[in-house]
Structures are given as structure tokens and as C-alpha cells.
Length: 305
Image 1 (cartoon, rainbow, N blue to C red):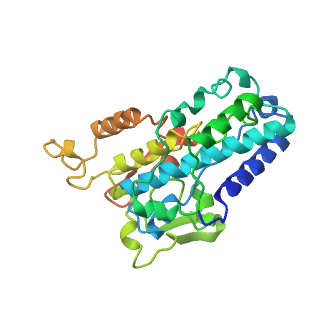
Image 2: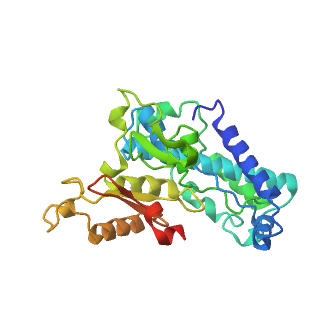
Image 3: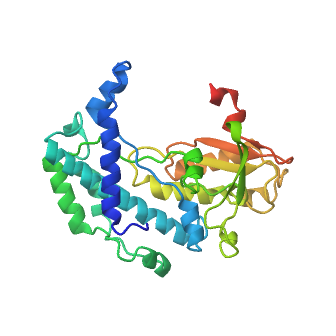
């Protein structure tokens, strides 16, 4: 978002990832080599979403935050399609069986061409994207015709990984997720305990750094749902819940036999909500217990295997 040329940054990122895919000639694993040779798939994603929102005093999961995610991922989609099409033109080559895809007949672009041109609903978001090119029907139609004629090189372009460890290295929040703690404690090999404060943490941004465990998980699902419609692969979405839920957070708990205790019914309701919102998968569900212990993938033998 701080790049002087948003589109160029995305195009360069796709080029870099494509180079890695093209040069990852792992002959020892023929299935990987074969897949790379045929599909040239990559997975450009995102990190520091919560950090960016907090920095700009936008509440995670709010209408303004959802609009930021919507336009951001639409731009990722547009520019990766654009650059993949340029690579196809240069190399005179598309991914395997491109002609059978929705790109080839142009129907993939209907989700943009059948809707009105994008218009900002919130002035704050409009200001954040000031000076950044937003494609209209005209640009989408031109791209559609070029893709139909020349193809695209990468069968898959976008994905959002959890980015847990690499986010800390880059002083960023992980993926699209909200933070779990304002100052997170991690144990890392020989270094022992390391403390990572949330980026841009200050008296002004603290109110916007609400823990994932204290957020209605429908806000997390809504955030990923808005992104998913622009993403051709999946998003690694994790849900965060306390064993004792904040009172009144979920309306179905008000007259429940267990008004604050997390139950399998709560998980079922949230999973059904995720399905309704067209989430492809729920990656993990992490639980924060009464004694302050976080239980997730690290404590799951089956996940480890």
C-alpha cells in the first residue's frame, strides 16, 4: 500500500513467484516437476492486514475494513491476471488445458462485468486508495479479450497462507487474521523466549488491536469471505475462541444452558456460517483455555502428523 505504483509491485511479485516455480526443477519428485511444468502455479497472498488497519485506525471486521479487503484483493486479482497474460504473450504459452478453463471462454470475468463499476462507500477507504488505479468495466473488458486471445501463464495465482513465522520476521501481523496478543511471546529454538509487539503499537492504535479471541468470529469469516471471491485458490482461515466466551458476544448463547461455555454447537454454527459465506475451508480452530494456555495445531498430534 505504500508503493508508489501498486500495480507494478503486484506484477513484479507475480514475476518473482513465477521464476521460482519455473526454476524449481525437482526431478527427484516427478509429480512436482510435472505440476510446475504444466500449470506454473503460484500463490501470492497478503500479510499485515490487521496491522495496516490499526495503523489507519480502522476496526477489524468493520464495514470500512471489509471494503479495504474487497478492493485490495480485487486489485491483486486484476494485476496478477494482467501480468500472467503478459507472460503468455511473451512466451506464446499458456497453462495446460487453458482452453478448457473459464478464462478461455471469458466467463471468469462475469463477476466483474456483470456488476457496476466499483465505487467507494467510505471516504476514509477512498482516501487510503487515493492515487491507486482502480479498473473499470473498460479495463476488465480489455483484459478479458486479451486473455481469450493469448491466454494466461499461471493456472493458479492467488492464495493466502497463515504467514505466522515470516510475519514476525517482517514486523507484520499474520495473514488476514487479527492478532492474538498485542505483545506476543514465542519460544524459538536456542534463542528462547522472544517478544513481538504488534506493528505500529502506540497509545493511538491500541484500541484497534483487539485480540482475535475477543472478536466475534463472524467478523473473521466475513473478512475472508470478501477476499475469497477474488481468490482462485484457498485462504488459510483460523478461528480463535476462548473456552469461556465473552458474555453476550453470540446471540444464540443468551438463553443457552451454557451462556459462556464454548460448545460443539457453537463451532457447528460458525462452520455453517462459514459455508454460507462461501469459505472454502476452516484451517484450524484455536482455543484459549481458562488457565491462559493456547491449544492449536502445536498441541494436535494428528495435525503434526
